[in-house]
Length: 82
Image (cartoon, rainbow, N blue to C red; front, side, top):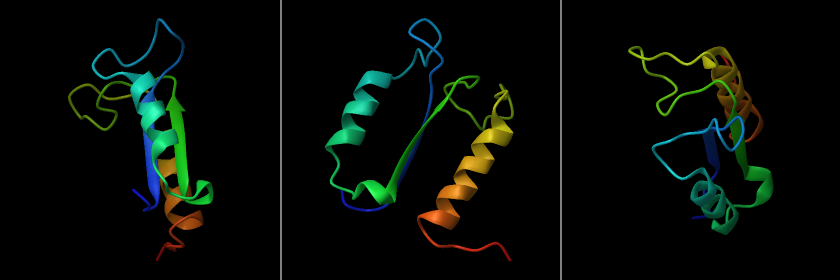
């Protein structure tokens, strides 16, 4: 993988983290991909959930997630708001 990459994951501490997927393996994967470091971002969301954008179990960090996504789109992908 060499494409721009944006990875968000629920992690507050070793006890409060995503119970569905392995955060450790996600971080290993992030380090292994060959995307240049200036084109990839990883964001730990401390008040998240497994599905951070779910309307059924909403995350307390939705606004933070939206802001980080917008920063990635603007800074890395060079997309501008209309």
